[in-house]
Image (cartoon, rainbow, N blue to C red):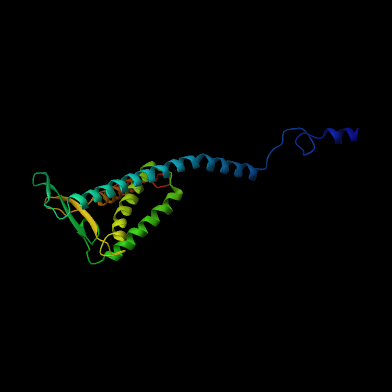
Length: 203
């Protein structure tokens, strides 16, 4: 009889055929793995949105600057909306909207640092609005950084091509616009309590 019991085994034991009950720690680990697996596809989509927005903003800025340099630089400004808006090509050694012309290298370093920070934030990105905001910042920063690196007078000291000239306002470009729009969106998201990882803080 004892031999038969040993062969058949007791339900719930390693020797038996009964249903086994996992330890509480194993259940917690399994739940964590499942939660991570469920969140990964969401993060992948958000990262794809970030880079798609960045690529669009960067390409638009790059193409617009190529056209301006080829067709508008060293020519008279083109009036778009009477005296209120015109296209006027200039070279800007400073930051966005012409500020800080004496600190070109510093602004180059800042732009590179912003790009690094965005890539670090992308590792915990689960929010679609944050993906759009960071994509705008990344595309704009890359657009102006490209000018800093490849345009005259030299590497890391290159002057940015600006051409959008509203009346009574500084001349800027599409990269500047992307940076400002991304920054404004980030401020709004912060006021709403939404973090890049998708969590919402309620006051």
